[in-house]
Image (cartoon, rainbow, N blue to C red; front, side, top):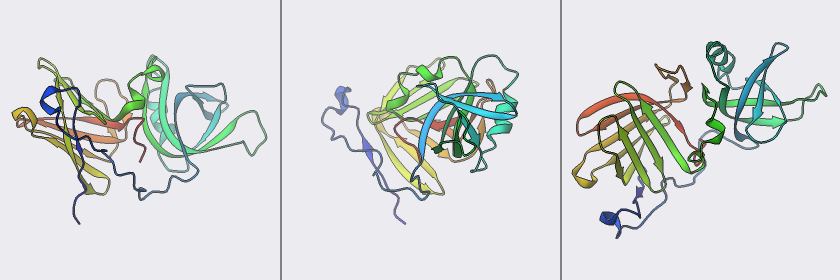
Length: 227
């Protein structure tokens, strides 16, 4: 099967001023149906033996039902003793509580990440991001948006590059760039990943390769992608 590829050019970079910007993702339906489902970010708390989810916006609380087998209860428990608010990014079917109580329910189907954070709800970059990947030892971070990818590595100048995306099957994909005489690849796979420093759990593993240097870490979809 021919791999689907898309080219993204950073309009603000003079070097690529003549490039035509194309959409990173083709907008075609994904294999897993998302009909009737909503992606939300918010905080998790435990009460009366149940896990409650409160969206970043609004006061409504939802009793979490892990219909998708995401292990959110275990993930939340593993972070319970750490400082900070327990933040979750998830997707599911939100509906009124069948028990007729004050809380509604969310039938969870996808857990994108769960972490201890006091400011994740206020991340101004999240809505425009397609993907965020990061790792440690040394620290590195990649933000991917419709304008390209920005790579930050400890002790190195930041890189802002256009990229090609190659779908590899089974939810795996690769982002690559040969711009500015740099050879960059970001390999992403759908696999539970734990940040070794913070303990946060993300739904993707990532491997960054810059001019032959390999660094590994975790990743999650930003607000611009929810498959």
